[in-house]
Length: 275
Image 1: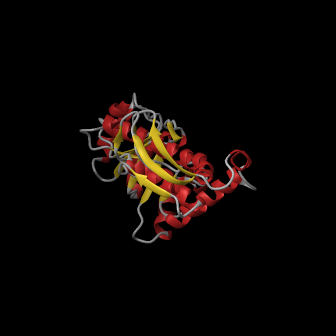
Image 2: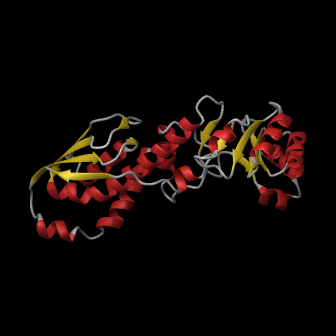
Image 3: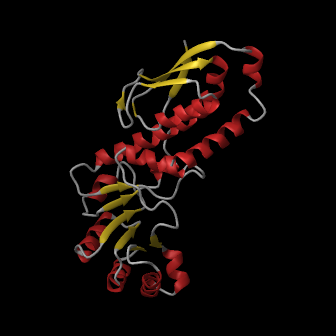
């Protein structure tokens, strides 16, 4: 993860600083020792403080970054998340990129935690999807884990998920599963997307390992869970929000996948203040 993280940080800093921070060069020239605090301006679940640290160290390895909380901590409004010491110009150049990443990761962890709490007491697990920000998938999926969620497949290369377009292109559910089974190693499981009880029956007959119930109402979902009866893992997807997730969990599904965890979390309000 660290190698890809360093590439991400390098690209983000190049995008922001490019040929130089002209404001800082004009206003804060030369060497000026400074210290700063990263402050949570609202309650949040902390994720990505080590990422923020690596941004500062990429600007100058001599910057001193002291974390005040561990990853996954529940942090109250006004808390100091970390202190930073170094040359003022270095701190100012690292500020925006470090906060952008930290705020987004905390937003994902905080939102995920709310979903996890909403299904507490059921067997349902909250998982993410591939609906991530291009270039940020690794850190966004890390933030989901910090929030108590579980990662679905990372990409197209590490899991088989046969969706409606695959079914249409291959000639049907049974044919798609048969082709996938013949192609993949025994270590991989096959998941298939279904939209009706009839498709669930087809998926079971074809030997699917995981059956996704896509955009079904809770009554239909519960019926399908009964049909499957433990012969495959059951994933619910589509139409999931904080108002509906508890009812979906109570249908008996094993997994609830939520694209919103990574495609539309609200960035947490965090600021850096120089002392």
